[in-house]
Length: 379
Image 1: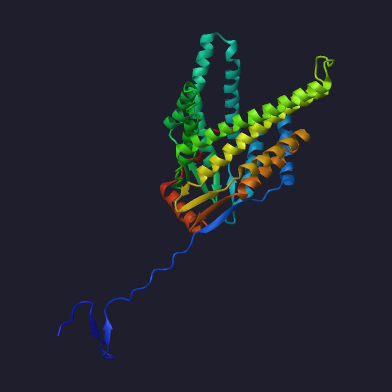
Image 2 (image 1 turned 180 degrees about the vertical axis):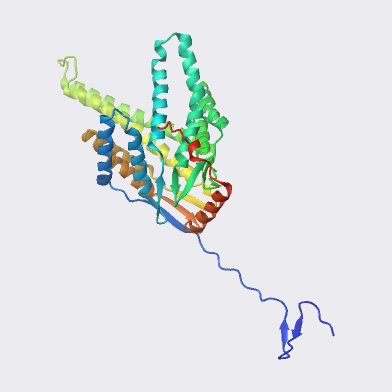
């Protein structure tokens, strides 16, 4: 007697019925993604030694050593920025950076002296600079990312040169012509070009932030700026009236102690407004960009607090001024440590499998020759 496929059949040895179907195994439980916080392990005292040597050698060599100083600085900050137990690294060639700086200084010299030439020559210089700068900036982005790595796997930048001319030339001109109403759009396209064309190995970053986030941020910043300026102006006027009444009509021209106090107050207001707006816009836009960014199955979490960031910036400026600039390395380390503390990566693994697969993909495709990325104009 025949049996249907999949029905129980007698076992030839024991005579018991055995099902021909394989037992159904339950799906493995879904593992929640892990959170890998970023950490900066450097210290201000340690970096100060590097900074002071870089400064001294740059001055003694009339700026030539600045290219080597940049490599030492970036390597320190890269190698002390750690994610999932591993640090980043920077592989830039100082000679290449020096070459880019020489070209950059030459272009800046042309720009600075254009006003001394005939107007037609000046126009030709400005047009030439406008035509060459987008190409140079695109090459600089390629250089910077190609010489950055994590777990031995390098980053890449694949932005097209035509897009660079749109972002670095056309949009700035349109922004000025639109009375800066296109400024948020320009900033959004700049970030999209910078991040959306970047890759880790062969996996490209997925830039998802909408342009509306940029417009909302700038509109709110504008209202904050207007409100702060009005409030501080009222306070300064009241302070000026009180000081004028206290000094009386016999006060002569010039800066009296009271007037000096008002001038100092104006400077404090200006610096506070600038730092406050920068802290607000940077924090909001960095959060908006990175919280919607994706890298394969990994996502990013960025939680910069504007007031906390503003406090750090103000403290850094005051301490740097009070120490005649010698607090600057400590300020840089403090900012790096804070930004790392509010940044993390969420994903299914600690990048071990991701890096392994990416290295195989890079080996299969073949890395571009390092000599192609031979220009760095960024200071």
